[in-house]
Amino acid sequence: MPISGKIVLFVLACASIPAGVYGQSVSSSAGNRTPLKVAPRIAPAPTSEISFGYRLHTDGWSVYMDYGMMRTRETKDKDKFYNTHILQFELSEKKHPKQEKLTVQDMGGNTLGKYVFGKINNFYAVKGGYGYRKMIAGKPDPGSVSIHWTSVIGPSLGLLKPYYLNLDGLSGANGSIKYSDDTRPKFLNQQLIIGGAGFSKGLSEMKAIPGAHFKTMFHFDFAADKHTVLAVETGVDIEYYAEPIPILYNREAQSYFASLFMSVQFGKRW
Picture (spheres, rainbow, N blue to C red):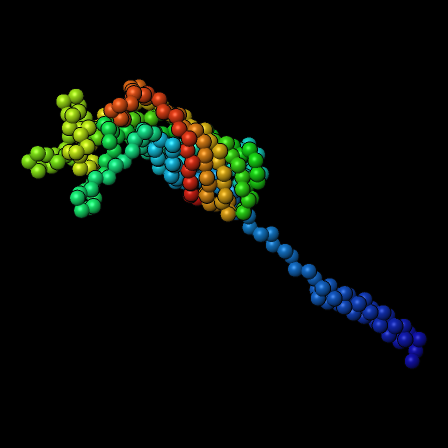
């Protein structure tokens, strides 16, 4: 073969080598390529909550609803519930610490009725309030317990309803009476009383008394996740009304009430 022909073959062979090597490199790189990882989607931090609860006071009971709004300047702390502003609505009943419920029975031991001896008024209160809850200890992580300090203040509307008793009259007919100077002898005569007249009796005579209330408490959050409210609260409740509130006939009427309480609260966040 002439020298010129050999040179041409050599050039063609050299030109084919880079193409083969490049092809192997691309194939190997494609085979060992690591798939890209997609970052998990992070759910938005809760900014609101609604919850319901029941409080047992040393002088009564109450049911309530809280609407909370989480507020913080630090974006990273929005889901930690450090700062929560609260709107609260509450319905409560006050009972005198000395009152006692009695049961009336007939000769055969059958229950005729129940009543509170000497009670002259039922006292209820409808309360609205604005409050603030701040975390002071613990971690707001799922499955852990965090401790918060909460204070609520606002107006209160007291509702005073006369307490009626059912009496066994001399003729055998039943009659209902409320306490007054004229009815006192019969109202306090346990031989005539056969029970309380029931909640509906006296509703038309209910009297509204304006007032204010303040409560401060520890809030223990046991929620299993950040979108659930499950808490226990314990604290002090103070109320003041524009007029003295008479509840028992032989006890001085008072304008202010102070009680200890414990409550259970549940709800959701979003």
